[in-house]
Image 1 (cartoon, one colour):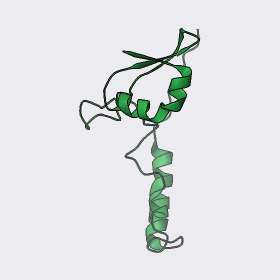
Image 2 (spheres, one colour):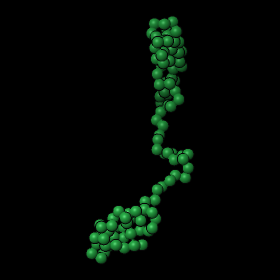
Image 3 (cartoon, rainbow, N blue to C red):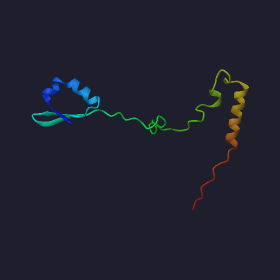
Image 4 (cartoon, rainbow, N blue to C red):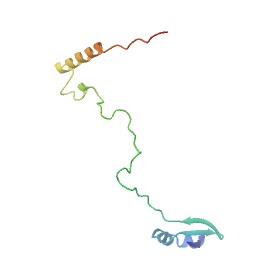
Length: 109
């Protein structure tokens, strides 16, 4: 490890930074004879593999495979309101609601 005074570091700053970057060691800069700062190279952190490098950075919220709109809203040009297909779907939807089993009443004590 090399030690250099603050005045000398100021004069040779760029060349010292290049030496440290090239891996020639660390440099301690002194001010009035006492260690003031240490110049060390940055070691890049590489992931072990590209696969899984982003693991844990995103979360899934809700249902990601189900449709987000009703079937007739998928394409209004093909299935516009007032068509027989849309009316049939509406009838099936209403009948499904009517025939759904009711929730059992809660027993009272």
